[in-house]
Amino acid sequence: MRIVGLQKLTLLDYPGKVACTLFTNGCNFRCPFCHNASLVDARTALPYSADEIVSFLKKRQGVLDGVCFTGGEPLLGDKVIELALAAKELGYQVKVDTNGSFPERLAEILADDAADYVAMDIKNSPAKYAVTSGINNWEKVKESVELLKNSSVEHEFRTTVTGNLHEKSDFAAIGQWLTGEKRYFLQGFKDS
Image 1 (cartoon, helix red, strand yellow):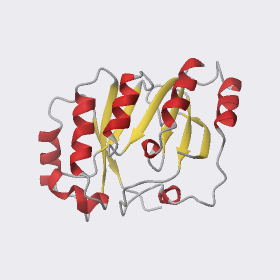
Image 2 (cartoon, one colour):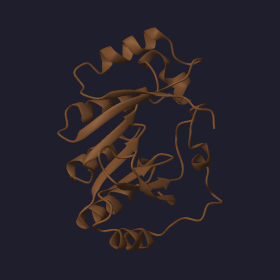
Image 3 (cartoon, one colour):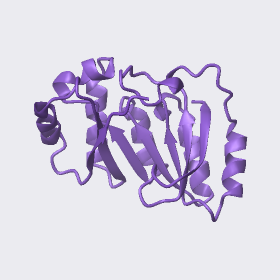
Image 4 (cartoon, one colour):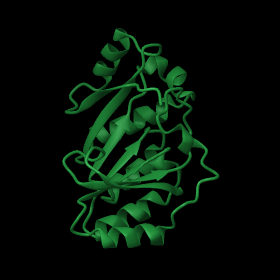
C-alpha cells in the first residue's frame, strides 16, 4: 500500500465527521466507471511515507475527527492496518473504503478494531459481478459482505449506478443479498 494522495479536509467522506482522506494506489478491479482510475496504476505519483502521514495527523489533532482510507483499494497492501491503528492511537476515528475482495484483511481490521466504519462497494448483482468489476472474484466479495453483516462495526454498502451496466432487476437481486442491512446507498455515475 502506498499513500499517493492526501485530502487534508473532507466533510463528505466520513459520515458525521470532519476528516482527511488518504488515497492509496493500486486496485485489483477494473471497473469501467472508476472515479479514481488515475490511482489504479499510480507508479509515477510520489508516495507519502507513514512518518509524513503520522506527522500530519499529529498536527491536526483536535481539528479533525477522522481519517478515511480509500483508493484504489486500500486493502490491496497489508500496511493499512498499521497506519489505521496509528491514527486510532492519536484519537482519530477510522473509516476504510473497500471493494471487498480481500476478506482476510478485512477480517483482520475488524478483529484488531482498526476501523470504526467500513464502506464497501457492491458493484452489481451477483450474476453480473464479474462483468461490472472486470474480474471474477465473486466468492471473496460475498465473504466480505458476510463479515460486515455479522460485525458490530458501523458499515454501509453502496453501488455506483451506470445506465449501461445496471438494470432494475440488478437492484432487486442486491436488495435480496443485503436484506436486513441498515445502510445501502446508490451513487450516480459522473464521467470525470
